[in-house]
Length: 350
Image 1 (tube, rainbow, N blue to C red):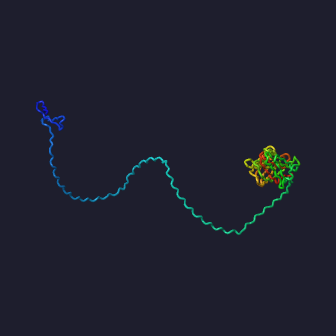
Image 2 (cartoon, rainbow, N blue to C red; image 1 turned 120 degrees about the vertical axis):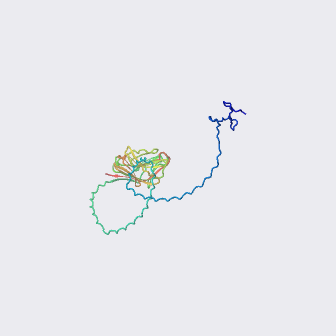
Protein backbone atom coordinates (compact mmCIF):
# COMPACT_ATOMS: atom_id res chain seq x y z
CA UNK A 1 0.00 0.00 0.00
CA UNK A 2 1.26 3.47 -0.84
CA UNK A 3 2.29 5.80 2.01
CA UNK A 4 0.32 9.01 2.59
CA UNK A 5 1.98 12.22 1.58
CA UNK A 6 3.19 14.72 4.24
CA UNK A 7 2.73 18.46 4.24
CA UNK A 8 5.40 21.09 4.80
CA UNK A 9 5.24 20.40 8.58
CA UNK A 10 5.74 16.80 7.93
CA UNK A 11 2.24 16.03 9.04
CA UNK A 12 0.69 13.09 7.17
CA UNK A 13 -2.25 14.06 4.96
CA UNK A 14 -5.21 11.92 4.00
CA UNK A 15 -5.50 10.19 0.72
CA UNK A 16 -8.58 8.92 -0.96
CA UNK A 17 -9.31 6.86 -3.99
CA UNK A 18 -12.32 6.39 -6.20
CA UNK A 19 -14.20 3.22 -6.52
CA UNK A 20 -12.08 2.57 -9.56
CA UNK A 21 -8.79 1.21 -8.32
CA UNK A 22 -7.06 2.08 -11.57
CA UNK A 23 -7.95 5.80 -11.38
CA UNK A 24 -5.74 8.67 -10.20
CA UNK A 25 -6.27 9.49 -6.39
CA UNK A 26 -8.42 12.55 -5.69
CA UNK A 27 -7.15 15.14 -3.20
CA UNK A 28 -9.10 16.17 -0.06
CA UNK A 29 -9.91 19.84 0.28
CA UNK A 30 -9.26 21.75 3.61
CA UNK A 31 -10.67 25.08 4.64
CA UNK A 32 -7.72 27.54 4.44
CA UNK A 33 -8.61 29.26 7.68
CA UNK A 34 -9.86 26.56 10.03
CA UNK A 35 -7.86 23.90 8.39
CA UNK A 36 -10.80 21.67 8.68
CA UNK A 37 -11.61 19.05 6.13
CA UNK A 38 -14.31 20.10 3.70
CA UNK A 39 -17.06 17.51 3.61
CA UNK A 40 -20.54 17.40 2.16
CA UNK A 41 -22.89 16.24 4.87
CA UNK A 42 -25.85 14.38 3.53
CA UNK A 43 -28.77 14.52 6.01
CA UNK A 44 -31.76 12.21 6.11
CA UNK A 45 -35.06 13.82 5.07
CA UNK A 46 -37.83 13.33 7.61
CA UNK A 47 -41.36 12.13 6.93
CA UNK A 48 -43.78 14.60 5.33
CA UNK A 49 -46.49 15.74 7.74
CA UNK A 50 -50.22 15.09 7.21
CA UNK A 51 -52.15 17.73 5.26
CA UNK A 52 -55.02 19.24 7.24
CA UNK A 53 -58.69 19.13 6.19
CA UNK A 54 -59.92 21.79 3.73
CA UNK A 55 -62.38 24.19 5.31
CA UNK A 56 -66.01 24.70 4.11
CA UNK A 57 -66.55 27.32 1.41
CA UNK A 58 -69.20 29.85 2.42
CA UNK A 59 -72.35 30.44 0.27
CA UNK A 60 -72.12 32.78 -2.68
CA UNK A 61 -73.53 36.21 -2.14
CA UNK A 62 -76.50 37.64 -4.09
CA UNK A 63 -75.67 39.38 -7.36
CA UNK A 64 -76.76 43.01 -7.38
CA UNK A 65 -79.35 44.43 -9.77
CA UNK A 66 -78.15 45.45 -13.23
CA UNK A 67 -78.22 49.22 -13.65
CA UNK A 68 -80.44 51.00 -16.15
CA UNK A 69 -79.11 51.22 -19.71
CA UNK A 70 -78.55 54.79 -20.75
CA UNK A 71 -80.41 56.33 -23.69
CA UNK A 72 -78.96 55.64 -27.10
CA UNK A 73 -76.68 58.29 -28.40
CA UNK A 74 -78.21 60.52 -31.02
CA UNK A 75 -74.88 61.52 -32.40
CA UNK A 76 -73.50 59.45 -35.34
CA UNK A 77 -69.82 59.17 -35.32
CA UNK A 78 -67.82 60.23 -38.37
CA UNK A 79 -67.74 57.81 -41.31
CA UNK A 80 -64.47 56.05 -41.63
CA UNK A 81 -62.27 56.59 -44.65
CA UNK A 82 -63.05 54.33 -47.60
CA UNK A 83 -60.11 52.15 -48.43
CA UNK A 84 -58.39 52.36 -51.79
CA UNK A 85 -59.96 50.35 -54.59
CA UNK A 86 -57.80 47.39 -55.47
CA UNK A 87 -56.28 47.02 -58.91
CA UNK A 88 -58.52 45.36 -61.51
CA UNK A 89 -57.11 42.04 -62.61
CA UNK A 90 -56.21 41.39 -66.24
CA UNK A 91 -59.07 40.25 -68.49
CA UNK A 92 -59.41 36.51 -68.80
CA UNK A 93 -58.24 35.07 -72.10
CA UNK A 94 -60.32 31.93 -71.72
CA UNK A 95 -63.81 31.96 -73.24
CA UNK A 96 -66.26 29.95 -71.29
CA UNK A 97 -68.13 27.08 -73.01
CA UNK A 98 -71.15 27.99 -75.12
CA UNK A 99 -74.38 27.12 -73.47
CA UNK A 100 -76.65 24.45 -74.95
CA UNK A 101 -79.12 25.60 -77.58
CA UNK A 102 -82.62 25.17 -76.40
CA UNK A 103 -85.01 22.84 -78.23
CA UNK A 104 -86.97 24.31 -81.13
CA UNK A 105 -90.58 24.64 -80.24
CA UNK A 106 -93.18 22.59 -82.11
CA UNK A 107 -94.81 24.25 -85.12
CA UNK A 108 -98.46 24.69 -84.56
CA UNK A 109 -100.96 23.04 -86.84
CA UNK A 110 -101.86 24.88 -90.04
CA UNK A 111 -105.15 26.64 -89.79
CA UNK A 112 -108.05 25.53 -91.92
CA UNK A 113 -108.39 27.12 -95.36
CA UNK A 114 -111.38 29.36 -95.54
CA UNK A 115 -114.30 28.48 -97.77
CA UNK A 116 -114.05 29.50 -101.43
CA UNK A 117 -116.53 32.17 -102.26
CA UNK A 118 -119.22 31.53 -104.81
CA UNK A 119 -118.27 32.05 -108.45
CA UNK A 120 -119.19 35.43 -109.87
CA UNK A 121 -122.28 35.38 -112.05
CA UNK A 122 -121.33 38.59 -113.82
CA UNK A 123 -119.42 38.29 -117.12
CA UNK A 124 -117.03 41.15 -117.90
CA UNK A 125 -117.38 43.10 -121.12
CA UNK A 126 -115.93 41.59 -124.29
CA UNK A 127 -112.78 43.34 -125.53
CA UNK A 128 -112.70 45.11 -128.87
CA UNK A 129 -111.72 43.06 -131.90
CA UNK A 130 -108.62 44.41 -133.62
CA UNK A 131 -108.63 45.55 -137.22
CA UNK A 132 -107.86 42.96 -139.84
CA UNK A 133 -104.52 43.66 -141.49
CA UNK A 134 -104.17 44.26 -145.19
CA UNK A 135 -103.44 41.28 -147.37
CA UNK A 136 -100.14 41.69 -149.18
CA UNK A 137 -99.78 41.39 -152.90
CA UNK A 138 -99.11 37.97 -154.33
CA UNK A 139 -95.36 37.41 -154.73
CA UNK A 140 -93.64 36.10 -157.79
CA UNK A 141 -93.34 32.31 -157.77
CA UNK A 142 -90.13 31.10 -159.36
CA UNK A 143 -90.42 28.01 -161.53
CA UNK A 144 -88.45 24.98 -160.39
CA UNK A 145 -86.07 22.76 -162.33
CA UNK A 146 -86.33 19.13 -161.19
CA UNK A 147 -83.92 16.35 -162.02
CA UNK A 148 -85.32 13.11 -160.60
CA UNK A 149 -84.39 9.55 -161.42
CA UNK A 150 -85.06 5.91 -160.61
CA UNK A 151 -81.69 5.19 -162.27
CA UNK A 152 -83.20 4.07 -165.55
CA UNK A 153 -80.76 3.00 -168.23
CA UNK A 154 -77.56 2.96 -166.18
CA UNK A 155 -75.77 0.63 -168.56
CA UNK A 156 -72.82 1.86 -170.63
CA UNK A 157 -73.91 4.33 -173.26
CA UNK A 158 -77.15 5.18 -171.39
CA UNK A 159 -78.21 8.43 -169.74
CA UNK A 160 -75.71 7.93 -166.92
CA UNK A 161 -71.94 8.10 -167.04
CA UNK A 162 -70.72 4.84 -165.58
CA UNK A 163 -67.24 3.78 -164.39
CA UNK A 164 -66.23 0.49 -162.74
CA UNK A 165 -62.90 -1.03 -161.75
CA UNK A 166 -62.05 -4.74 -161.29
CA UNK A 167 -65.11 -6.43 -159.67
CA UNK A 168 -67.12 -3.18 -159.32
CA UNK A 169 -70.68 -3.19 -160.83
CA UNK A 170 -73.70 -0.93 -161.35
CA UNK A 171 -76.62 -3.35 -161.60
CA UNK A 172 -80.03 -1.90 -162.57
CA UNK A 173 -83.13 -3.56 -161.07
CA UNK A 174 -86.82 -2.85 -160.54
CA UNK A 175 -86.11 -0.91 -157.36
CA UNK A 176 -83.36 1.28 -158.76
CA UNK A 177 -79.69 0.35 -159.02
CA UNK A 178 -77.12 -1.56 -156.94
CA UNK A 179 -73.73 0.12 -156.70
CA UNK A 180 -71.25 -2.61 -155.63
CA UNK A 181 -67.50 -3.13 -155.30
CA UNK A 182 -67.41 -6.93 -155.51
CA UNK A 183 -64.92 -8.95 -153.47
CA UNK A 184 -61.80 -8.20 -155.50
CA UNK A 185 -59.32 -5.83 -153.89
CA UNK A 186 -58.86 -2.41 -155.52
CA UNK A 187 -62.42 -2.26 -156.88
CA UNK A 188 -64.85 0.65 -157.33
CA UNK A 189 -68.13 1.68 -159.02
CA UNK A 190 -69.32 5.19 -160.03
CA UNK A 191 -72.48 6.72 -161.57
CA UNK A 192 -73.09 10.32 -162.65
CA UNK A 193 -75.60 12.30 -164.70
CA UNK A 194 -74.37 15.29 -166.71
CA UNK A 195 -76.09 18.60 -167.46
CA UNK A 196 -76.75 19.34 -171.14
CA UNK A 197 -75.21 22.76 -170.50
CA UNK A 198 -71.84 22.19 -168.87
CA UNK A 199 -71.69 25.87 -167.91
CA UNK A 200 -75.00 25.94 -165.98
CA UNK A 201 -74.52 26.65 -162.24
CA UNK A 202 -77.41 25.47 -160.08
CA UNK A 203 -75.49 26.45 -156.88
CA UNK A 204 -76.74 30.00 -157.45
CA UNK A 205 -80.40 28.91 -157.23
CA UNK A 206 -80.95 27.31 -153.80
CA UNK A 207 -80.40 23.67 -154.81
CA UNK A 208 -81.83 20.68 -152.94
CA UNK A 209 -80.18 17.29 -153.49
CA UNK A 210 -81.57 14.00 -152.14
CA UNK A 211 -80.78 10.26 -152.20
CA UNK A 212 -82.58 7.24 -150.76
CA UNK A 213 -80.02 4.54 -149.98
CA UNK A 214 -79.77 1.17 -148.26
CA UNK A 215 -76.39 -0.35 -147.30
CA UNK A 216 -76.16 -4.17 -147.36
CA UNK A 217 -73.92 -5.99 -147.22
CA UNK A 218 -71.03 -3.88 -145.92
CA UNK A 219 -67.45 -4.99 -146.49
CA UNK A 220 -64.83 -4.63 -143.80
CA UNK A 221 -63.52 -1.45 -145.46
CA UNK A 222 -65.20 0.94 -147.90
CA UNK A 223 -65.56 4.61 -148.88
CA UNK A 224 -68.69 6.11 -150.56
CA UNK A 225 -70.15 9.47 -151.68
CA UNK A 226 -73.69 10.67 -152.51
CA UNK A 227 -74.20 14.26 -153.71
CA UNK A 228 -73.45 16.74 -156.49
CA UNK A 229 -70.40 17.16 -158.75
CA UNK A 230 -67.97 14.47 -159.87
CA UNK A 231 -66.01 13.34 -156.79
CA UNK A 232 -64.16 10.44 -158.36
CA UNK A 233 -63.13 7.36 -156.39
CA UNK A 234 -60.02 5.23 -156.43
CA UNK A 235 -60.10 1.49 -155.73
CA UNK A 236 -57.25 1.83 -153.27
CA UNK A 237 -57.59 5.22 -151.56
CA UNK A 238 -61.35 5.92 -151.91
CA UNK A 239 -62.85 9.35 -152.60
CA UNK A 240 -59.89 11.54 -153.50
CA UNK A 241 -61.45 14.81 -154.69
CA UNK A 242 -63.31 16.13 -151.62
CA UNK A 243 -62.07 19.71 -152.17
CA UNK A 244 -63.94 20.06 -155.50
CA UNK A 245 -67.04 22.26 -155.34
CA UNK A 246 -69.81 19.95 -154.05
CA UNK A 247 -72.49 19.30 -151.41
CA UNK A 248 -73.51 15.85 -150.18
CA UNK A 249 -72.76 12.93 -147.82
CA UNK A 250 -69.53 10.96 -147.35
CA UNK A 251 -69.70 7.47 -145.71
CA UNK A 252 -66.63 5.51 -144.53
CA UNK A 253 -66.20 2.14 -142.84
CA UNK A 254 -62.87 1.29 -141.20
CA UNK A 255 -61.47 -2.20 -140.55
CA UNK A 256 -62.45 -1.72 -136.88
CA UNK A 257 -66.11 -1.83 -137.97
CA UNK A 258 -66.82 1.83 -137.15
CA UNK A 259 -69.03 3.50 -139.77
CA UNK A 260 -68.79 7.30 -140.10
CA UNK A 261 -71.37 9.40 -141.95
CA UNK A 262 -70.27 12.97 -142.71
CA UNK A 263 -72.01 16.07 -144.06
CA UNK A 264 -69.58 17.59 -146.57
CA UNK A 265 -69.20 20.55 -148.90
CA UNK A 266 -66.33 22.49 -150.52
CA UNK A 267 -65.77 25.63 -152.59
CA UNK A 268 -63.13 24.15 -154.92
CA UNK A 269 -60.29 24.71 -152.44
CA UNK A 270 -61.34 23.84 -148.88
CA UNK A 271 -63.77 21.26 -147.44
CA UNK A 272 -66.13 21.77 -144.48
CA UNK A 273 -67.14 18.48 -142.85
CA UNK A 274 -69.22 17.30 -139.85
CA UNK A 275 -69.53 13.76 -138.48
CA UNK A 276 -73.30 13.35 -137.95
CA UNK A 277 -72.99 10.01 -136.12
CA UNK A 278 -75.46 7.98 -138.23
CA UNK A 279 -74.75 4.36 -139.28
CA UNK A 280 -76.71 3.47 -142.47
CA UNK A 281 -75.92 -0.27 -142.27
CA UNK A 282 -78.98 -2.53 -142.87
CA UNK A 283 -81.42 0.39 -142.83
CA UNK A 284 -82.91 2.77 -145.41
CA UNK A 285 -81.77 6.38 -145.14
CA UNK A 286 -83.09 9.48 -146.90
CA UNK A 287 -80.14 11.86 -147.35
CA UNK A 288 -81.12 15.48 -148.11
CA UNK A 289 -78.88 18.57 -148.44
CA UNK A 290 -80.57 21.99 -148.81
CA UNK A 291 -78.60 25.11 -149.75
CA UNK A 292 -79.70 28.68 -149.10
CA UNK A 293 -77.33 30.19 -151.66
CA UNK A 294 -74.60 32.25 -150.07
CA UNK A 295 -75.98 31.64 -146.54
CA UNK A 296 -75.77 27.98 -145.48
CA UNK A 297 -76.34 24.32 -146.33
CA UNK A 298 -78.53 22.20 -144.05
CA UNK A 299 -78.14 18.42 -143.94
CA UNK A 300 -81.01 16.07 -143.03
CA UNK A 301 -81.15 12.29 -142.53
CA UNK A 302 -84.65 10.77 -142.42
CA UNK A 303 -86.08 14.25 -141.79
CA UNK A 304 -83.81 15.13 -138.85
CA UNK A 305 -81.49 18.12 -139.17
CA UNK A 306 -77.99 16.77 -138.47
CA UNK A 307 -75.69 19.67 -139.46
CA UNK A 308 -75.64 23.25 -140.76
CA UNK A 309 -72.61 24.59 -142.69
CA UNK A 310 -71.94 28.25 -143.35
CA UNK A 311 -68.36 28.07 -144.68
CA UNK A 312 -66.77 26.96 -147.98
CA UNK A 313 -70.13 26.89 -149.79
CA UNK A 314 -69.87 25.75 -153.45
CA UNK A 315 -70.26 28.48 -156.08
CA UNK A 316 -69.12 26.89 -159.33
CA UNK A 317 -70.39 23.67 -160.90
CA UNK A 318 -67.53 21.18 -161.38
CA UNK A 319 -67.42 19.29 -164.71
CA UNK A 320 -71.12 19.92 -165.33
CA UNK A 321 -72.35 16.94 -163.22
CA UNK A 322 -75.64 17.30 -161.36
CA UNK A 323 -75.77 14.02 -159.43
CA UNK A 324 -72.83 11.77 -158.54
CA UNK A 325 -72.36 8.63 -156.45
CA UNK A 326 -69.30 6.40 -155.97
CA UNK A 327 -68.03 3.52 -153.78
CA UNK A 328 -64.56 1.92 -153.26
CA UNK A 329 -63.44 -1.12 -151.20
CA UNK A 330 -60.13 0.58 -150.31
CA UNK A 331 -58.07 -2.28 -151.76
CA UNK A 332 -59.60 -4.82 -149.33
CA UNK A 333 -61.02 -8.03 -150.87
CA UNK A 334 -64.52 -7.71 -149.38
CA UNK A 335 -67.74 -6.66 -151.10
CA UNK A 336 -69.91 -3.65 -150.29
CA UNK A 337 -73.28 -2.93 -151.97
CA UNK A 338 -75.36 0.25 -151.78
CA UNK A 339 -78.94 -0.07 -153.09
CA UNK A 340 -80.09 3.30 -154.50
CA UNK A 341 -83.85 3.61 -155.02
CA UNK A 342 -83.99 7.27 -156.10
CA UNK A 343 -82.05 10.51 -156.47
CA UNK A 344 -83.09 14.07 -157.28
CA UNK A 345 -81.84 17.62 -157.68
CA UNK A 346 -84.26 20.57 -157.46
CA UNK A 347 -83.42 24.28 -157.83
CA UNK A 348 -85.04 27.59 -158.81
CA UNK A 349 -85.10 28.53 -162.48
CA UNK A 350 -84.78 32.28 -161.77
